[in-house]
Length: 217
Length: 240
Image (cartoon, rainbow over all chains, first blue to last red; front, side, top):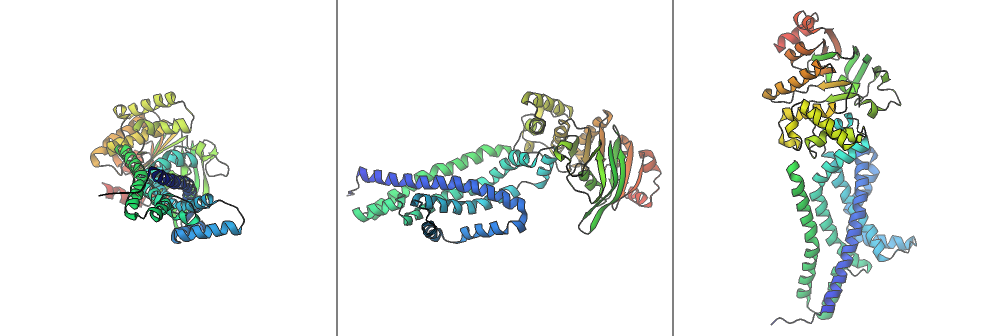
């Protein structure tokens, strides 16, 4: 019959790992989204020519594997003697990685607002900023939401890679238990279930918001 | 008063306005007719500063629209404009569509703006649609909402850019009726239109644009019944 030496304390250890995953994800998604909005608006305003340097930089963050970015980021912080703890380095790298993707999502959302609608807003005397805030932002958010939810879920799973900098997040916590208890299947099933439990509300939030906004379209 | 002096405008190689001179007085209804590409719509967007001009000037009540330092956002409060596309703000209800600019631009209180919005929406026959989202309305209703939205800013002038061109034929009438009503109330209007019967009925003067030039301008009876310009004669023969 089924028998395990996994104790309640081990489960607590996994929960701590999950908390670390959540912390890294939350910081990175929030910072990455704010940066992504700023970069997305800049890319939209500056036009293709002036945004070349920014686009190039963001392309680098999108095309180099995250693991390499983390290792290089950590090397850079020690070369420049920044003295960042692994948590800070992880969050900075993951935020930039998130921002690179979020910029494209934001840019696409803004372009989806018809020029004629924005023209109508401006001809009512709304300033550029008022047009952005009251017309473009709500419409672009609706369009961008599914992609942004996808990005958030992706970052949550990709955040497992920060274990390379020595952070004990959910996956690393599971590995430690597997090494000690030699029950890989069982522990990885629990680990996967925890990932699901923390992802599910985010996915549902997306569904809820889409539903709430849809009668207006 | 809107004074247009020798205005020129090009898009790349194409000169769409080749020196337009025109004055519209307070209370006047001017309609502009002409083929597509004649520059008539471009002129409207130049009047409220959505487009820049290359030469000449446009003066609205003493303010040079394209001069450096002109506060366009402020100027646009005076100039209501309604476009061919309805341009409803789809995430706002009809009432919110109309209230947005008075609250954010004029700084009116919600109650004040709502009273004004209800008044203007009733005026265009949409009093029963206040809480509805634009997507639930016909094109004609959306266009009347756009008119109410412009009127809620209490503009001194209304510019209409082919406002019935994107409508199904059976919906054109209700929008034209709204324009007729505004004209009869003494609103100063410039209407770019393809509706010749309407132009003849409401206009004090009708201008015919052809290839960026104002080829003829006259009171409607004169322009429609005794056109002098050969291009206008061809144009009128083709539209009958």
